[in-house]
Length: 304
Ligand SMILES: [Zn+2]
Image 1: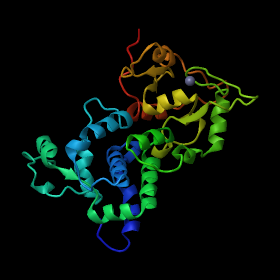
Image 2: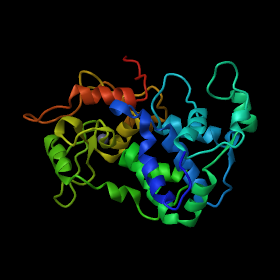
Image 3: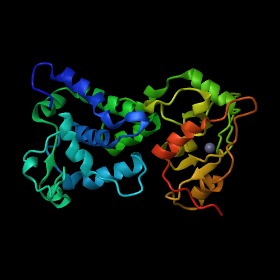
Image 4: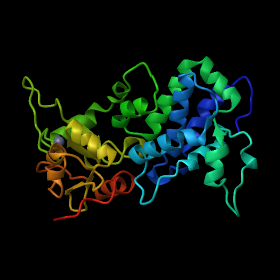
């Protein structure tokens, strides 16, 4: 619990990084951050403090499917809705009275759907409504801590937040990493080979992607970098594209679409990565492994 007091603002800012208790060894724990972003959006739009679980369940599940860890089974939006209470950032009034079933830590789903309403504790809710700057600062902290820059604009839109600045602009860090990676791959997308030159500049329209995310302990080194066009960069970060143990492109079996989608993604399935050029270190398998476990939307398409 965050005790009430005059320095609530500072204690709130201190509490935000601490919610990542499950983020050990780079394992992604995006459940609570996604719920918090959703809740910040509600506060910003002036909606009421408490929201029924049934009202956010589907939305949260959708966010977890797209931006969360790839899972074998179903996503569980009830986990953050219930467990965020222990971080002192959430409350479900009367939650202790809900029927938990035998030996369970959480109320039954039927109870959650019928009766559980959650939101920021009153003092935090009030503070966030009074200080829109603080709300935006917290949203940025959550985005930076838990998601790669390529997610930010989409996530902000998905939760209905207005951060009144282009969030992706914040991520233009590390020009050295960018230059090294682009150079190692000959300024060419490692998936499709796109290598555009605009007015003599070959650095446009290709980007340096971190395989293991920077926010999750991935270093800015060539062994963790890969040169990609914006489409395939986003595909890699969303887990539509993966990399196999023998450095081939994998396309998720969960991606479907028309012939243009096939042309843009499907045709590269099992193709060897293009690059790096001779003399440069290829991606390290420990980073490929992290991406496979934490990001890639398994399983890959069957090999023909
Ligand atoms: Zn590409």
